[in-house]
Image (tube, rainbow, N blue to C red; front, side, top):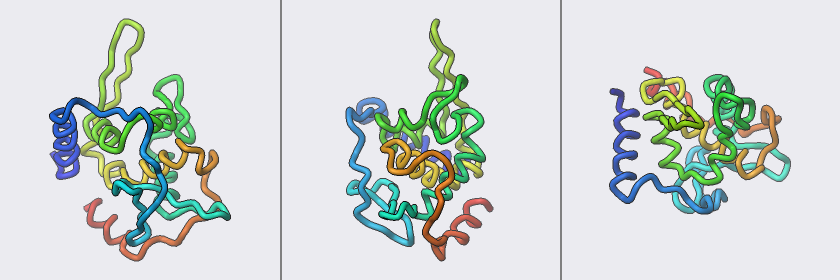
Length: 172
């Protein structure tokens, strides 16, 4: 099990110990209140997006779109809107918190009943997803509140200087 899978497994266990998987009635305010090295955070320290008045997105929202399209779109549909195979992640992020999303991606999910068979595999060992999970979350968070339209963001901030080093370190 990779360190990423262990981290998200631990987050899932902690979430369960604190009263089950928390589902927020209303998602936290996604407004960016801080930024470090081009990565924005909301008031609770969760990764979030930044969209300028001209529509220019932060680099992580942009790379989240790229990575979502490469790794998630085949099940969850273009722009996170869902498919006949998997649910809309745009709608899911309206009620799931950050820890829920991270736990589900890392550990997978199985919700089988007489009326449905929803099964998502675990991606905790998949570096193509786990090394970019915050960026994918940021992109979907922006889509879930209509901060960005469908499709590839037209313009984005430059790549942060430490991004390539962090990426190389994660990918191995």
